[in-house]
Image (cartoon, rainbow, N blue to C red):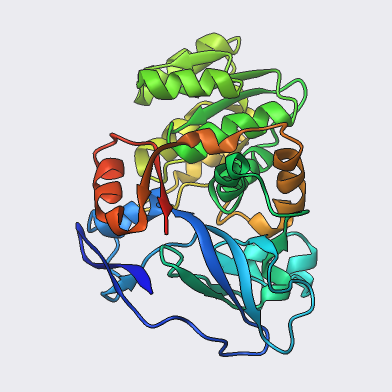
Length: 338
Ligand SMILES: [Zn+2]
């Protein structure tokens, strides 16, 4: 089969690789229908992370079940399924508390930018859609695999909801879907921080009521001006740098909540500032599995269109061009078609 590997910073290749097979009775093999490139794939691409090379790429996927192990009961061959980047049993105490991405049996799922994928703990990881989706629904369902689930968690962690003024730091796919999520959760006002016209447009379409183009201290000032000088109740941080995290914390009113879902890189928290600001911080890798049934339902009933963040669609063999486009911010998010 064809599969995507990163051999080092900036070096992405699509190559022939062995098809995965059932290794554990709890595994499923799925035929990938669509995969995509994640903002977090850019960390190794830019040399910030240095994993063991070559790295099998891709952790966002929708597909059709080809084969299941003897211990799998919840999904069967032929079903259209969505899973997330961490496999979970969905039965342990941590899963049952809603944190499937910290499951005590958690396993990473990797290598989804390929024709086939092995998914461990299939019963607790994969969710089948009510039927085979129409083609136009597929990108929206794919978004639920990570970016939408991550934006949703960011909004929940920031306690976005009725009566709340929400600010979103980061205008990548996760930030944009954080806006959509805050809107779905009933937020009163949503301020998007973005200086890119195309992303501002989508932000407004997803529910942003205000746009702030400034960054850093100036951006924080703008947020305060829009929120009676107090700061936002809820701030979604969707970047993961020191600058973005401080911007999020400083934009939050005393007692407010920051939901941070950008994978943190080199972030150091100001202890004393946090102490005196009464800021709640909550975040981490989103327990997407927790939200999949709800998100699939919203998409299936055509209530939301999270797949609009895909603004470039390529064949799997063109994956390298997709990475370059996202790295250079020519594309928000790239969809790959095996
Ligand atoms: Zn678990």
